[in-house]
Amino acid sequence: MSILKIVLQPIVENAIYHGIKERRGPGLITIEAERENDMLIIRIRDNGKGIKPETLQQLRTNVNLFLEKGDKEGGQRLTKGYGLINVHARLRLTFGEPYGVKIDSVFNEGTVVTIFHPILEGGVETKRA
Image 1: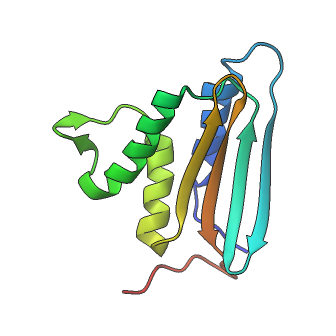
Image 2: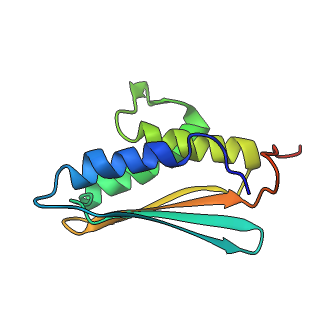
């Protein structure tokens, strides 16, 4: 089974840098994968600092706006979530909907990023027009 290159690295790096690094004491990052019909669902979970609700909402908005408007929103460059946005955009542009990234977080408890990727046997295919 194959997945797109550089899908996990930015998400795990974010978990370390923004989650675990900001926490007191040791942290934990888990990566789980499961097959559901023709979809591979990968969850990267950390018990780090988590994301404040207003920041989480802005991050979710940025992820969705990027595909519509590029890296500028109303003339201002997006400043948060480039790794997450890049992974989401590459999944959507390569495979279409319903693939991409979803982020959930509870401040002071941790974050879960869920990646929705098609099941690929033998190599990466691109979406057909």
